[in-house]
Image 1 (cartoon, one colour):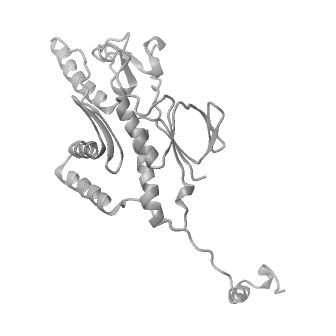
Image 2: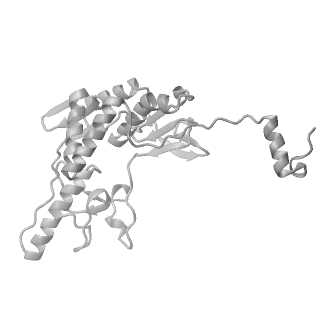
Image 3: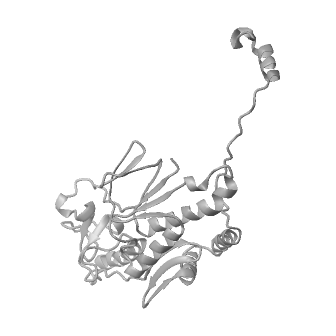
Length: 288
């Protein structure tokens, strides 16, 4: 059961599938030479007709092409209905045996105390107004994945469940709370889309920035730069950059647990005689 099944074709699922594929290609042959790497199959399952549904169609197609080239089994228009007895069960009845099941296909809101059910929207997310104020309440606010805001003209069905949305909502809410205390005019939340990116593997990525769409090596370099820039502290930036450089040059990973299979010991007649002397014939039985 060396199958690895990833459910969810968003950026997280695509990046996990790509990382596992590279590990299969570059790490397994060195760390586990006795293992046939072809026994390890990686599946990426998405319920709709393309990967990265939140990005442009061309980005989706490029990501799918990269993954298939890397040996990932991409299953589109397939819904997972259950995971039972170490089997992923699809809506069409097919089963994929696996003990490694990764779910990245979205989340639902966690129920909050005695909150009125009428305040909940799609996926159990809490409905909020343009100030991120919970529906039906005056002094309770919610931000991020937990809430759904339909007052933004460009996102009438709610914002994408991404970190950047939560960051922008949190920053504006902090200001608005100060405005409310001071009796000043508040500001309605409008999400500023700074772009979307997904890295698939070495020199393989897709990026959508304001005014441009990129793929391949250039998109991959931009992804590295953006994530390196977001790391706090010069020292941490240098450490992460050196780790990335090491990984790129050596096709290796600096952090992982290496466990080699132990070879079975051949028991000789001498071992048996020593055991009989130590434990006695009453325990091991008399020699035949």
